[in-house]
Amino acid sequence: MVISQKNADEVNAKMARVAQELKSPYAKYPLSAQTGRSMWVNPDGGRTAKGEPCFIAGQGKDQPMKEHYVYGAGSLGYGYYHLLTRDSHKILYVRLQSTTPFACCSCFNKEATRAIDEHDDVTRICYNRSVATIPDDIQAAKDAEA
Image (cartoon, rainbow, N blue to C red):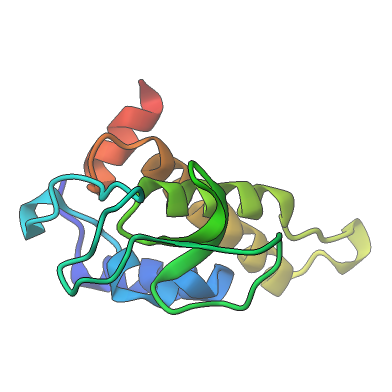
């Protein structure tokens, strides 16, 4: 399956609108093992190629956003999980599930429909990544179906 650059750009714009953390180049759609990232980084002691830790312990449920990280409860407890970890996508998936946009019948318009559709698309991508064996969106879709 080949994803056109135009389609990828549209998906990336959607992702950034739905979840600000997904503006990071580490979350750029499509993730592909062919770019050299053939496995998720372990948050427990893992580091990025730039030497950044893949997990930074946090305090409590709410913390400010940190570039290239997602804050939430993951395998090591509350903290910042780098987008190179599968935990970061699990956290985003859970968050997106609990923040689904809602539009009542009387205010259901084109803009509301677009927001709901975009949210659903990004939630699906985050789910696929959260269950993916490797950081590759095509493989992630296959893993999600299994």
